[in-house]
Length: 202
Image (cartoon, rainbow, N blue to C red; front, side, top):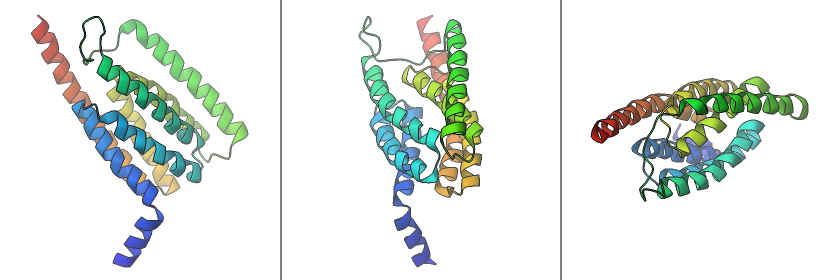
């Protein structure tokens, strides 16, 4: 039995390593630790390969986007508000921004779904396109420390877990189920911090 497990781990070391780093990434994200970004960058780089092999092409492209946005988030979390010379703090998403975020999500979904339907052999083009579109928006919101990005992740992570289970990516399924729970925990923690910030500013 142990030999079978060892053989499986060796054969799937890229996915397993990406999964472990993914756990670390989400934990650091909840803590608002700046190491969130370099860890996330490395995890995403590994998952580019995992999703390419599994033919989740939109998710593969999403991981490339994560690598880029990790650099952006890393810089923005450190830079914060240049006018106040302080690091970025948690805030609610401005109401006027929601229209743009919804519009961007719909546009991304339509474009990605079209490409997957006509130019790839993706087994779940609509599901893949939906999670990818929402992930693009949510990751950008994380880089700006908007509270509500966690709620988007709760849906995306659970829906993604179902897709990965269907495909047989079990370490990734476990990762995304944990992500679902931790996204909700992250929302509660960030919301409490926001309330504290608002109280202190009064």
